[in-house]
Image (cartoon, rainbow over all chains, first blue to last red):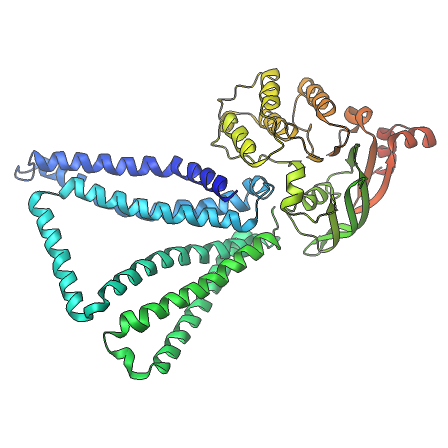
Length: 263
Length: 232
């Protein structure tokens, strides 16, 4: 059933997001054309147009990255806790499957939004020289990291990538939990969600600071060395976010199955 | 087992408001049952409890022996009292959704009913009137071969001609093992299709009886009994 939920979820979100990404790519092509016909050198009016389209383009990229997150999270609220919840919660599926399908779709759209931003930027700005500069930059960064971390460079990169994805899911699940808690109230559901979100964040802040303090205490001075990053700090943050994320996931599932209270 | 639904001391409160109080109720298979009561008497609350959209404050509820969960959702077909289909969908997409998730869904039956009511499957739900949306939802719900149909105000918002068609659909599509629980306050319209009636008032079950018994023993129609019991 997870497969079917995923299919349905992907269809429902792509309806909004694919046009957004297409718009970004079209904007990128327009900018490229403007750059190619070299309006930069022309004075006055054309220059204004050029600056205008370029800034629109950059703002659009930022807006689309943020909008992707907002739209997917808004869908969680709309699809599960408003009238549409009557449909979703009477389907013969487990509540955790509903949550999973929404988390998987969130991760996919996050990746796709970054990919389309990179593609759009490449369309507009990429040239032979530009590509060389970027490759050079990546090589230099890699070499510096390699000098600092030596053999642990691979593990550092893997950990960073995993941590990036965990933090995307982590942030979303905090909001999902807040929505799940809010819907359980009879009145003021949205207000309760906001209060729950603030509460969750305070608790997470507290637990994270406490854990970091505990870690630096346990490992004593060794956290000060740069090599503690791949060996202690990153794995520790990963474990902390997996534990805290897991608890929040469990609670979201609990509130949406045992405390469901659709209006 | 001949019981499709069993409620044991079932209660539900919202804050200080008691919506349902100590309901003990058993429904048999193969009946059409009217859940009758004035506005705010707890009809919708009972139906939402059966469908697991809210959880009981106390007491238990069994559908075919299971508490509301994935197994009960497979055999209960539910028509809520509001539009629950995503507005952006076409009618055909909503049908595909039901085909995907409900094994007992009969796609041909759904298209046949759409055709009878002159509804174009390519229309978006957003473009439909409230009454038409209700018709679409009812078609989806009645196209399932469920064991228990819970219809919350199924005829409230549709015109009398469609009402007749829908009631006819309900009777003809229902197999002899299935039970239909239908809430309404338009009693005279449905009285002649009902086997049993349940009266609830301010969250309390005050009568559960066969319609024939009411006619024989009290010499009244359900409609006049309702007016008497719920007299303001």
